[in-house]
Amino acid sequence: MNRVLRAKKFARSQPHWALSFVVIVLAVLYWGVMASDRYVSQTHIVLQSPEISPIGFNVSSLLAGTSGSGDLLLLKDHLQSVDMLQKLQRKLDIRSHYANGDIDYWSRLSSSDVELEKLYDYIQNRIEIHFDEYASVLRIKVQAYSPDMAHAIAQTLLSEGEQHMNDMGQRLAAEQVAFIEEQVATLEKRLYSIREELITFQNEQGMVSPTGTVQSFFAIVSQLQGQLSVLEARKSSAASFQSPTSPEIIRLNSEINALRQQIDTEKQKMATASGNSLNRISAQYQTLELKAQFALELYSNALLTLENTRVEAARKLKQVSILQQPTVPEFSTEPKRWYNIVIVIFFAIFLAAIAHLTRAIIRDHRD
Image 1 (cartoon, one colour):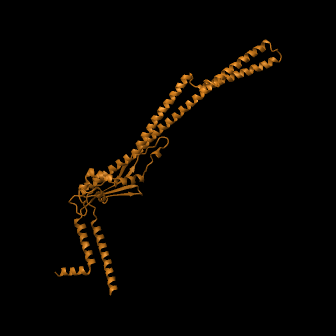
Image 2: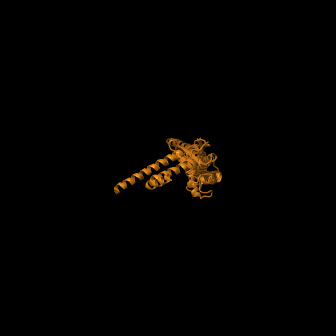
Image 3: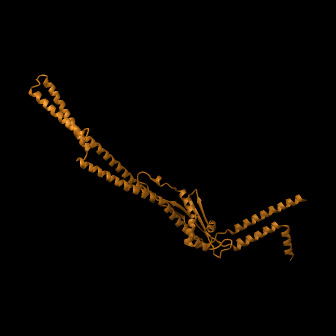
């Protein structure tokens, strides 16, 4: 009875120390006896892509995205997302696990049908994901109230994370491949159409190469003009000692006139003011030929781009390389009982001491 009275008197005279004592006792009871064991599964991962070199020029700018650390940060964000939480719920029913009645009241989830938002806030304290910028490694720690559940959650995070990264990386690549395949088909039709137009034009004109035909006619005219020059020189030479009515002069004049007529005829074939002259036909042919060459170049470039894009799509596959497999814990490492107890004792005494000092200062000022 005397002890009880002394305790009550002490509590009235020194309430801060009494409160500090009560807090310490409660902390020892909770962390030492009541707190449920939590098992921790750990895993360390990195992201890797297949090393495939694109053919020819690089089209990675068309499929620009994050890589290296950026990919790991995207993966970290997804692992901590509500979408991942819903996947864990569907596969493992984590609500029922964390709301189990065997878990102490202060640690367990309030109920097995708790709202998604509350479940998300709760699970953030049970799944820790840390990104090591120096090593570019993602370190995952999962706390659960059984070793198997901790391991299962960690394993699900890995498999679902890898699938998500592959789906995200390939979605843009697949759209790009489909777009380029459509362009290739369009350019192929265009190329065949222009080639058919070129062949039709050749058949209509009866010439495989009008340009070559023009060159042949030009060579003939040049040869005829050379012959004309020789005959005119012979005529000038013969006219110096023969009369204009001599048989030789008459023959030379006849040959010269025949050559001039032939030259005019050949020139008319190559170029006239109207009609289908060779120069007009050649110009039309060259235009069609240039169109065909340009269409072929576009088609070739599109094929090359398509192959590069397919290679780039393969490079977008992300493989989660596991540096440390998810562990199956053999004993609980959480909560850190002695650490928590010591921290509570330290702060309880520290705050009580501050309160005691404050009261002493106030009492001195009153006196």
